[in-house]
Image (cartoon, rainbow, N blue to C red):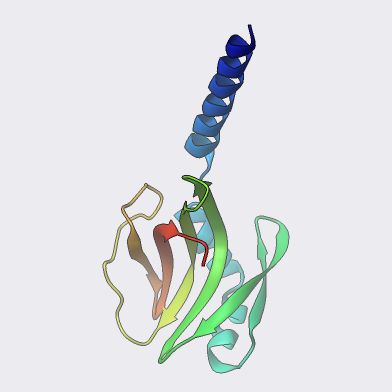
Length: 141
């Protein structure tokens, strides 16, 4: 009887994990592009100043995105960040945000809404602005 209870708990936990993983999704490209245009002035201002965060309205909620700068590139992270534990030491992580780059970025995709392998992918919005989606594995240090 004890083993049946343990098997039942394991099956419920496995099913719950499967549905959480299957249902977890990033903000859609369409929603992110709408956020970009709704906050366009703030996006353009952050390129020229030294702020470390940028306040935006995303899906009706006030959010602050972290600003990272590096040689002609300004990255605004993260509109959405998902993490799935693999084992006790490793997780699969995926994030989606915005990036301004003086250099053209690649690889460019028509859509970042679908699952993609590990790495960083970009969708061009306008001018020097892109959506970035990064996927990879994370281990505690």
